[in-house]
Structures are given as structure tokens and as C-alpha cells.
Length: 93
Image (tube, rainbow, N blue to C red; front, top):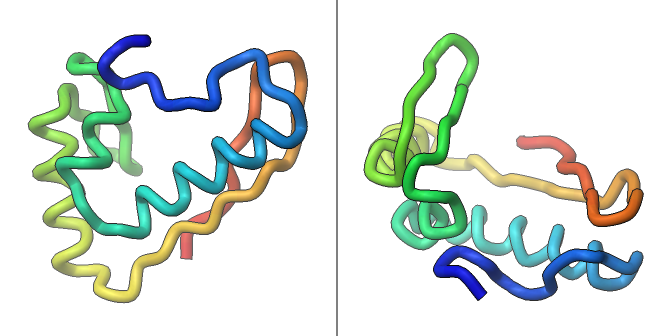
């Protein structure tokens, strides 16, 4: 298992895909940028609207700034499709 791999891992069943989605939602809603950044590769590339940035350090900075302004931010993820090892994310409030 790699540094950022978190079970359950693909291939997903409907049950394990739902567990993966819920674990991601719970992690995001801790508002702990360091913990969240570890779920992404060290050279991860992100886009937020017109802003583009790379790497975990920058992810942490972005999330700190985001949550300093968006005090009531809460992410809601739902399993909206399951095909082989894929799942999709849902919406942010």
C-alpha cells in the first residue's frame, strides 16, 4: 500500500465504494488541511475555478485560506455511479 492509499481499494463493490465515498466526505469535513493533503500525491495538480496549483504544500495553503473564509463549508459526497473501479463525487455546500 502506498503512502496515500486508504482502504477500501479498487476494485470496488457497491458497499466498498460507498465506504470510500463516506470516508472521503468525513475527512474533508474535519477541515484538517494536512490530513486531507496526504490523500493526494505529492505532485497532485488542482484547479479551483480559475486558479491552478500543484503539490501537497499548496493544497494545504489553499484549504487553509478556503476555510478561513468559508466557515460553514461542508462537503457532501454521494455514490452516483459504479463502474468497475470508479466512483464519482457529488456536491459541496
